[in-house]
Length: 121
Image (tube, rainbow, N blue to C red; front, side, top):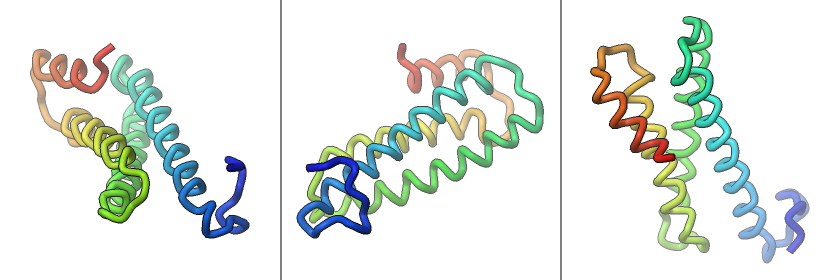
């Protein structure tokens, strides 16, 4: 099927592929966000403004991924692989939020453990 088919012009038979394309686009956006966050917030000392910007973006990313995960978790959803993929991304986002989203004090050992879990490479 044509991956460029837009939702508005898709036939009912094409809708599962359109949805898969959209889910993959959100996953790519999430991966890009996590990578950018790693470079600009985790590996450096961000300005308060940059940190606030990432916290807001992080909240929105979690909202989007939670919503999509709830939808693909429906037993009738046709592409079951998205349940695990989105669930994994949601777990990464939530773990990072615990570390970097809310202001609190964390030991170096705790931070290293979370970073290894989220970024195993």
